[in-house]
Amino acid sequence: MPELPHRRRMLVLAICCMSLLIVSLDNTVLNVALPSLRADLHASVSGMQWTIDAYTLVLASLLMLAGSTADRLGRRRVFQAGLVVFTLGSLLCSLAPSLPWLVAFRMVQAVGGSMLNPVAMSIITNTFTEPRERARAIGVWGGVVGLSMAAGPVVGGLLVEAVDWRAIFWINIPIGLLALFLTMRYVPHSRAPHPRRPDPVGQLLVIVLLGSLTYAIIEAPDAGWGSPLILGCTALAVLSLVALIGYERRRTEPLIELRFFRSAPFSGATVIAVSAFAALGGFLFVNTLYLQDVRGLSALHAGLYMLPMAAMTLVFAPLSGRLVGARGPRLPLLLAGTGMVISGVLFAGFEAEASTPLLFTGYVLFGIGFGLVNAPITNTAVSGMPRAQAGVAAAVASTSRQVGQSLGVAVIGAVLASGAGAAAATDRFAEASRPAWWIITGCGVVVFAVGALTSGRWARETARRAARRLDDGPAPVGDRPAGSRQTS
Image (cartoon, rainbow, N blue to C red; front, side):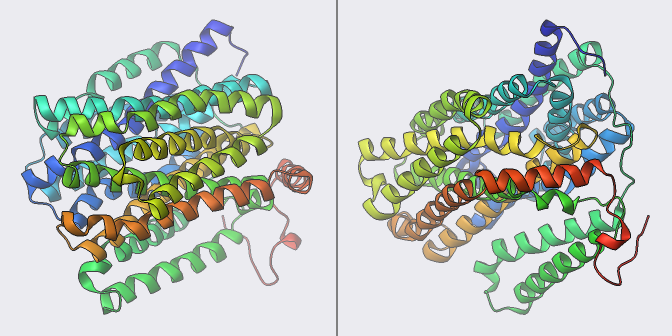
């Protein structure tokens, strides 16, 4: 793809960020609307979890397929298709007559969303080829996550109070249509010179793995952790993981390029993405229920209460991109882990929710931590990888985020349901949320520890070795496990 003028590159970045805005905004807006949705559709705690996780699960399952498909068929073409499907899914969600239909339409949204974020990141990677400029562009990309968090709770609260929860899906429609029009006019065609072949078996194993694991976690409080259904889903998840690893190692062009994970920074970015977004998913879920069910705030006031956290994410995400471009990912990751840990400890050990000043302090610290963590994840995932596989590398990072958010909502929701009952009774909510806050704290510890471990000299050397192997093409048969065979 020829080098574009600076103004055109900025316009392409803005169009890609619009797609991220509607996909990210959808989750933060929906969190604020959960109590209203629960009352209207008579949803349980697990029902509220499924309205979020049905979306993130399908998104996580299809992101890598979308990334490789865009590399093969053309990134602009797949990006346009994603905008159409996501916008249509948003319209259907606003018309959902019941909870099962809403969950189904959320899955339609997710099919479209899977064709947006990783493909947009691949477009950005191929548009901004200079490393420092690319890091800054990724910082802007991360800042859009902060913007969605800042605008989502307030916009969602306004729409819920002025109309009802259905209105939260309307905002995606004009943004999606505008992004589609601009994409057709300004985003250039690009595709990988040697794209990967489809991998339907690997794709199916990913879907079974994520679906069975999340179902087991969400439904365990009602069905019982030792019930045959939950044990069967857990066993299915384990078997799917083993089969996925074994099958992908034997493919010449796998859905998941396992050689990426020979790079310690890339593997670390994956673990950090899961941990950070699990913390975010749990943080939003528990705070939405606390502010509206326990404190009795309206949807709008609950959104305003979480604004300090979202505003800090908005401020520190682009700053993190600049830090990564100038000094590398280590400092932002260590600061991110520190902020998230201190925030979690304030709630878990000092009952920050009982004091409004302490509550806001916890929100600010979490927002700073989460704002700093996004740019290093994305930059590490795509830096050093061959540009021809940018879509696949970006999709792995995006998948890790969605898997983390799904697990965060599933685990935190299960903890709350087990401790406070399906109705999340207000007199037991604070006690039930304590283990949830320790889990969020643990996620912050993982961000700090893995960030420290995978950002030093040794880690950088593993990244260089992994890049050389990837540049050499598919791994030779002699480099595969004994007795393995190649499959097309």
